Image (tube, rainbow, N blue to C red):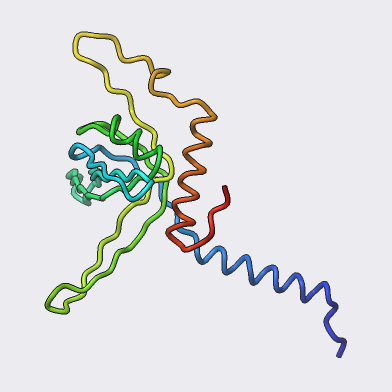
Length: 170
């Protein structure tokens, strides 16, 4: 038998690394409506904003009857996204969130284990809110510039890196 070539070993190692990366994918895109006004607080030098969303899903049963299912999720935002969310994530407003899931685990005083899954938002699109007896608000007023979006994405990446214990490069 012939020994494998070094290039083959490299390809196999690269393929194995791809499989590891694919198994660790954690990304979510979800649309829903803000349930109540957001809560903003400071976590050291970083703004944190939390708000719940409701996500509706309609299904049709075999007999043709429509069934509506509602799920509720808590959303956490950090940095500039948190500042923006505290202002624009108003009760009832539609949002599209791109982010990841985070599971918090703890034990209560009685030793019982608990768990809660949250959405960590990395990007949020806000659906327009028309004012009563007026034309819909100009979307350009709420649209961030490319530079602002890049700053928000960098802050989200820094927040994730801090959360995972990585060094943040400034």
